Amino acid sequence: MRDREAVAMGAAPITAGLDGSPESLAAAHWAAAEADRRQVDLCLLHAWVLLSPDAPGSLAGNDQNYWAKRIVHTAETEIHQRYPRLPVVEELVAETPVTALLRAAEDSSMVVLGSRGLGTVGSFFLGDVGLRVAGTAGRPVVLVRTGTDGERVPSPRGGEVVAAVSLHGPCRNLLEFAFAAAAARGAPLRVLHTRTLPGQVYTPWGVDPDVSRDIAQDAGRELAEALRPWRDEHPEVRVTETVRLESPARAVVRAAKRAGLLVIGRRGPRRTPAPRLGPVAHACAHHAACPVAVVPED
Image (cartoon, rainbow, N blue to C red; front, side, top):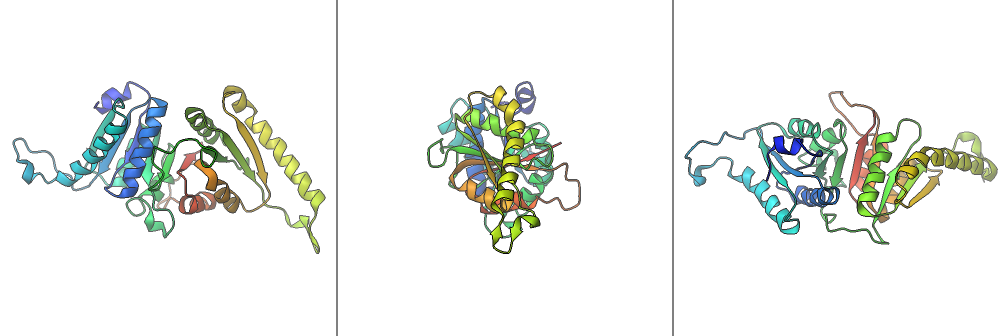
């Protein structure tokens, strides 16, 4: 293992948040696989505001931090069995989880958290921690459910990376993350753009096919133009461009059914007292079965 100073000398590590739940352990395994693919270090972070300083000469049976240490050590042991050469940092901090994870994000390439998916907002990692971190962090935050750990590999059924692009604002960070993820996996990349049809498209007998076709063609040209520099930079990535004229949330969640990773964007910094994800990101975090990467744009 290395300390944080040693990690900082190399490429930014991937940080996985742990709380002892099956979801957070699945997130740690996913993060380990991603760190191994990208050849960066992995940091296993557990934050407990009541963490006590280690007392010199104290007996193990009297260690007030026993369960906190066990959570991190158990994850590290399992990961070491799968990735014996992966450098892993175990970090326990006496802070609230949100504070600790946002601080760790500043020095990480991404933060990976467990998510229970369907349910209320409180079903995220450690209550609303996942929601607040994904809506505030200045780095990508990946939400992972159980059953989607690092053993998942590209396959015809579920290996492609899906990136949802709106084109109504900056998407550089999203595309950079999506192309890098696809390249690291050797997986195909599907870039999905959706547009809601304007009211004038609808007629008493249905949707005007000529107008909807023109809208789809215009959207396709805009998408192709946005992707051109990224295709040139990553010629090894096989890219499919898809345009859907329907509800963005519905289209993206449906596209994620066959994906190994879904990448969505988040507009601007969230500095409000109650950070939140946009409607598409929120729907995907709750309903997409694959890991969901929320990427902040400038």
